[in-house]
Image 1 (tube, one colour):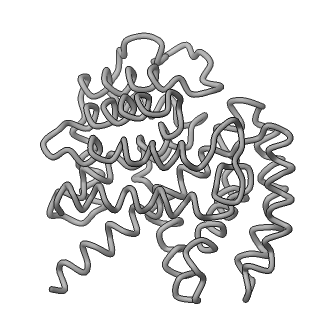
Image 2: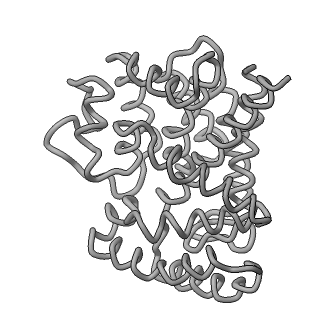
Amino acid sequence: MSPKRIAELFVRACLAELAALKPGNVHRFAAGHGLNVADFIASARAAAPALARSGARLGERIYEAVAATRAVVGTNTNLGIILLCAPLAMAAERPQRLRAAVDAVLAQTDHADARAVYAAIRLAAPGGLGRVEEADVAEEPSVSLLEAMRLAQARDRIAWNWTHGFADLFTTGAPLIAALRARGFPYRWVLSAVHLHFLAHIPDSHVARKFGTAVAEALAAEARSYAQRLLTASQPQALTCALLAFDAALKARGINPGTTADLVVGSLFARLLLRARAMTRSH
């Protein structure tokens, strides 16, 4: 797949996610946490060329995408999205099946990639990062990039995905998108449902870092009834008022399930890449 097409699909995934009502996050229905939709649109368009830069190593793509984002919005809007989508973008250039290509991309990372990713994380300065005893991103990496992700996987769901074949995207998110689209859900309600499904079943690691595991688990429990109602709805738009109230309540408490939003973007990007590759093969 061409770099231009990969970049286009990345931006499409980011913009589609912003059009969905995702309680606790920034979306077209409501701003929040000092940010608005325009910040995220600018971030997506700034990061796309670096993510899709053919011939660049994975660490370079990640660092350059973060740097481009900082240059236009001056804050961390998309580090998690970049960490999930950069391997997908690089894998999309390869001829093998997408998930196998992602595994190959990750397996070929080295210490140069680790240094670039650590630098990208320091530049993005995500909230609630804290300090850890081993492989702390405030220092130069002493382990490989994949080993650093293994060390972080218990406290960070994006790191968990790096070490588990992007399972949340390929076995949960992308198939759920396909199933809901087959039921006739509009894309914005598909992504709201995927967001709530992830939120209900995977305690958000961004929330856990900022507020503690108990708060993240309580949030998951709180989201379950909303997820069940939306996933079984025949008219998802009927839940608009209830979800807006949930959204406002989370934002009033300062709760931003950012990792969940990252998983939604990554899942849609994976789905779009899979469909584009399938259409290319069919012709």
